[in-house]
Length: 564
Ligand code: UDP
Image: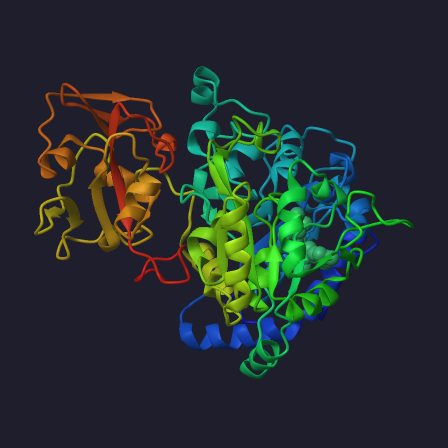
């Protein structure tokens, strides 16, 4: 059956069920964004032309909303609890539905079991049964539930699973044996999935797939209206929970901000003003999403106090014409030094409250400054009050951008294919490279035969030998490219080193998430023995890593130029 774009979302709203506060929040959002999705679908349909798209049978099992996993989020929807996950799930459902796929949605173990065909009451079904779904989108909670209740089918079908994983899972944490042996074991990792099966909220690490969400879009008239109606001295503080206002050195910069601007907050409260919020702040309480957007439309500045990390709100603020001001973290926060990230399956270092805003958007929309430096802070406020900015939304966070990306994943990502069938064997080298004219990096020869089934297509591959201590994520960015882990197998050979004019004194195959790499001194070349450990993330001063990079589209980092 062919997938046909849909523009009427009322059936999806039925599929989403009812009852829980979280579902009510998600359905309101989907309803509000319906016309935006419909327009985006039209545009993408035009762009894709008459390309063949199969309709997939898809199960969406939202594990964190099940009673069995505690469902701590639903009761906090109206009390300032996190909403980012619900924003994302609502948008994933909408995107899959709009793309024309056949959907089932489950938010309880019972519904999950009945959809999987597990007889109720049978905890662990030992038999492998045919799975009626081509794809399953779930989260870490759901993954655990499926493992417990699918019996042997879990192993057989886990290649069809996609795990929505806000902050990401790095390969070193994903490989069970390696994680256990080398201290990367956490509560969440060790599933031995292909790291691209984990899908993140922001493009944190290219080892995972970037799923994202959408922000509301403005048309030209709305943009002009907003620009004219801004109060240049109005600031809204990022955060719904009173705890983010606890002093810890905030008095100083709050006093400076208060000198120049009227400060607004959207902090949840029950009957009394939360004591953490100073009296000079105009607190609106937690607002329904559309009213929060209205507030952002009037404000000049959206200011972060360092928490929450990496949520949707700063993108919404920037889309509504605000400047986002946030603090630089020095030293960076990570699972090694911060409670929030502790136990998360990543070593990623976070250099500001919202690294995506800092690195992918930047000035004039985003200012990242040291809040402990009063002069720097004050200068930023003054400069921001004087700058005019246009509302801005990166393409990848528009409905069309999200549809395009998910369409590409569904069309091209296949983790069930026998490993190595379409790729060169790790121990043999195909030699399809040419050395670029400046002889510092490898380019896939344009006339070399494309590797069938490889996605992204191999012509976008550019390989670089990174400086000692440099991760592939950064080494590729240094050249205006992005690391592409699916290209690692093409570089994992002595031949690739040779082509880069690195004569290896010796070559060894080992399991290590930084390989292929060159170790100094001694010119030892190390090759990767375990394909699951190919990793863009990670660095050690001992190694110069061999890095597979590719180009990307401006505003759609997940896709290379010839990828669709
Ligand atoms: N939001 C809201 N009311 C408010 C403040 C925020 O509905 O008063 C919404 C906002 O539109 C955003 C969502 O909360 O889409 C999540 O934003 P945030 O960045 O705070 O992420 P979280 O920490 O909740 O995951």
